[in-house]
Length: 397
Image (cartoon, rainbow, N blue to C red):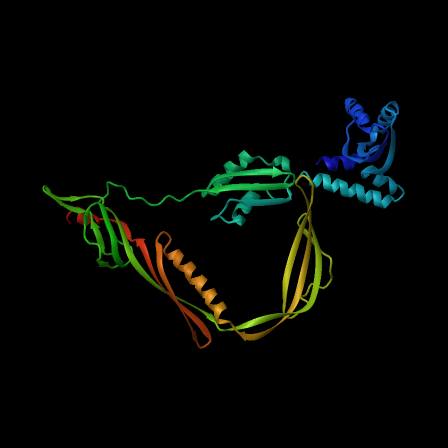
């Protein structure tokens, strides 16, 4: 940011000549004259940059220190404008552009959302717009505490939200609520049943009476641990709890076409440009139709910005159209196997989120126009599921 200020105020690049230039620098420091980009060129010569208003004082001190100061160049906005002092339209355009930049820096031109996983970014941005926070909103109107309170009411799934403003950028940080698992009250009588079928490998009944043994084959919904316990004083209802690890098996299949369209680029390419200013798009081309029958469209957006995080309301858009032709070809078996294997593995991991995948076996075959892969997997997982004992059983009805 300091470099921008120095450019706007203007500065001089100077050369300091003398037998003891370091002593002259120390004298300047003692008198409050600051330098930057100080370089020693040789034993008797230094170069540096200094503010325009300090050059007279600098020469006076140099004379007293038996040194000489020469101005090498004049740089910055004042000297740039002075060179075009007779070009009134240019000066007017420069002043207009500088004014636009200044007032644009007082508004928000870029909003990003971070930390959301389940809640969509569009939903968060839409609610922000509805409460008056969007593209073009003055930075001075951003009240993080007020925005947080309103947004937490509008989106109950949010646990925390804040807005950090840096220049013309607004960064929205959110934290989502964790959905608590449904827990059945320990005072409610329950059974433990099988969530899915398998062969029992480990059985630990913490409360209730076991209905199966290690090595038994069980089916989905089968009673594993009963909440009805026989005691010396009669039957008693408890909240059964158990850890039941079982070997489970899955058979999954997926297929992909063996014939595919292969894309080959011809090398022909057309580019179109556009500029977006404060949300309004201006196309810098006349023909808006797609130039080729078959082509890929690649869009590149460049947001103009200034140092210090100040984003301008100007976006340069480049659209590239790359022509291609297609022809039908055979999908390589190794490529098909890789695609299908990754797909089936991902599906299996979703089905066994907390279990262990012990063994997998993949089989690929070509069935007419499709590659078909079958996955057979053996897993080890907890199949215990707690269910309430029906009211009629509790009451003996």
